[in-house]
Amino acid sequence: MSTLRITNQIHFRNVRGDLFGGLTAAIISLPMALAFGVASGAGPEAGLWGAVCVGFFAALFGGTPTLISEPTGPMTVVMTAVVAAMQAGNPEHGLAMAFTVVMLAGIFQIIFGALRLGKYITLMPYTVISGFMSGIGLILIILQISPFLGQANPKGGVLGVVTALPELLAKANPIETILGILTVALIFFTPARIKKFCPPQLLALVVGTIVSLVFFQNVEIRRIGEIAMGLPTLQIPFFTIDQLTLMFIDGVVLGMLGCIDSLLTAVIADSLTQTQHDSDKELIGQGIGNIVSGLCGGLPGAGATMGTVVNIQTGGRTALSGLTRAGILFVAVMGAGTLTRQIPLAVLAGIALKVGIDIIDWKFLRRAHKLSIRAAAIMYGVMLLTVFVDLIMAVGLGVFVANMLTIKRLADIQADRVKAIDSPTGEVLENPEAQALLRAAKGKILLLHLGGPMSFGAAKAITQRQSILDNYEMLLLDLTDVPLLGVTATLALEKTVDSAYEKSLEVFVVGAEGKVQTRLQRFNILDRIPRENLVATRVEALRIALAKLEVTHPNLADHIHTQTLNPVDSEKSETPEVEPLDSEEPKEPKEPAIAETSKE
Image 1 (cartoon, rainbow, N blue to C red):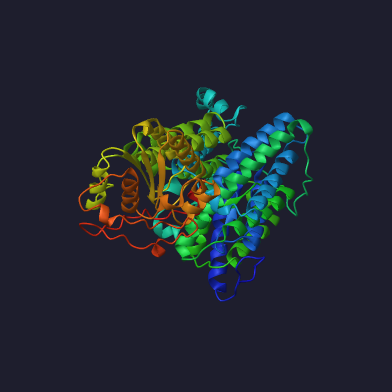
Image 2 (cartoon, rainbow, N blue to C red):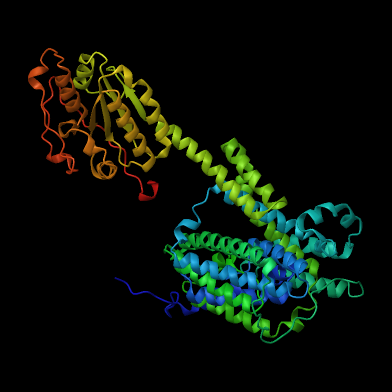
C-alpha cells in the first residue's frame, strides 16, 4: 500500500528539463496574465498575482506533475461577471467581495476533492461542454471589442456591448484598432520556426508596445499604466448578508468551472506524458491555489492547456517546472511596474481576443449538424444561453436535456429487450427443444424474457405486460440474460408477480443468479415462489410447467426433470444439466456486465 503524498511529484533527475519547461511557460504566461487581468476589470496586477499564486500552490499540492495552472479564458469570463456584479451592488467593497468569491471557489474545490468527486466532475455530455466552452469564447471575444476599438466597455456586459456596437464602431480609435489588428495578425501568422524560440503572444506584446512608442508617441493611446510593485495587499474576506447567496452561487460556478478546466487539461497532460494524474488531489491543490490567490488579490485560475503543453514539450516532467514558472513570474511581478506601464490596452485586447477564438470548439461546430440534429440543438442552445442569459442555466439546462434524451434512448433499448413469448418463434427461442415444449403448451404458458441490464427504463415495458396475463395459466420470468436489475425494474417485477397470483397464475423464475438473485431476495420475491419453481434454464422451466399442466407430448413425459435452482446458491454450475430430447441446448449468450455505477 503506497503512502499518501501531501505534495506533488518532485524529483531532481530532470532538473534541466523542468527548469527550461518552467521558464518557457512563464514567458507565455506573462502576456496572458496581463491581458486577463485587464479584461476582468480587477486590473493587470490581479492577473499577475493569480498566475503566481495559483501556479505555485497548485503545482506544489496538486495531483498532475506537469500541469501549469494560471488564470484562463473561461475563469476570466466568469470573474469578469463577478467583479461587475459585486461592484454594482457595493461600489466601496465590491472588489474585496469579488476576491472573497475566489476564496469560496477554492474552498468548494477542496471540498470536491475531499469528497473524492474528481472522477465524476468531467462526466458531462460533450455537447454541453462544447456549447459552454464555445459560449465562453464568444463572451471573451465580445468583451474585447471595446478595448480593441480603443474605448472602455459599456455597462451591461455582453448585451451592453452588442447593443452599443454601432456607436463603438462609429467612435473607434483608428490607431488603437491598428495596434489590435497588428497583435492578432502577429499571433496568427508568426512562422513556426520563430515560435520555437519566442511565443507569439510575447512577440505581439513586445512588437505592439514598441510600435506604439516609436510611431504613435504623440497620439493619445490607452495604456496599462503603473503597476504597484512589492508584495500584494492582503484581501480580508468581506461579504454582506444581502449578497451572500449570490456570492456562494458564484463561488460554486467558479469552483466547478475550475475543476472541469483543470481535469480536462490533466487528461491532455496524461496523454502526452503517458502518466496518470490524481484527480481528487488535483482539485485540492487547485483549491489551495485559488484561496491564496483570492487572499493576495489575484484572479482565479485553473489548469491551462497552452502552458501545460508547452511545459511538457520543452522538457517539464515534475512539479518543479510549475514551481519554477511561478518563481520567475514572482520576480517579474516585483519589478513589473516600469516594464509594463507602456503596454497599450488594445494590444492586450488582441491577445485576449485570440484566446477567445481558440476556446471556441470550431471542429465540433463544423460537423455537429452532420452528426446529430439533437446534438447540434443542445450544443447551440447551451452556447447561446451561455452568451446571452446565464452560465448556470446554460449548463444545468443542457445537462438536463442531454440526460433526458439519453435516458429516453436507453429506456427504448431496454423496453425492446422485454419480450412476451407464447409461441415457438423469435430469436429468443432458438433451441429446438424449447420450441417444442412451448408448442406443446398450446398458449397456456407466457414466457416473459428480459435481456441486458434492467433499470427504470424497462419498468414501464414490464408493467405493461400485466394486462395480458388473463390469457395464460403459467408465467415464466426468464432472467437468464439479465446481469443487473435496478430497483425500479425489480418493483415492476414484484407487481407482475402479484398480478399473476391475483389471476391464479403459477409463477416460475428462471436463471436468477448472482446480483440479480440477491436483489430479488432483498425484495422477498423469491420467498413467495415455490422452491421447485426456481429453476436454472428455460427448458427446465418449460418441462416442469408442462408437467404441472398435465400436458403430454411425444417423447416429452419421460424426459421431464425436476432439478431446481437453490435460491440461496447463485452458481449455476451446481445445478445438474438437463438432458435435451433432440439436441444439445446451446448456451444462451450473456450480456456483458456493466459498471457498478449503472445500478440505481
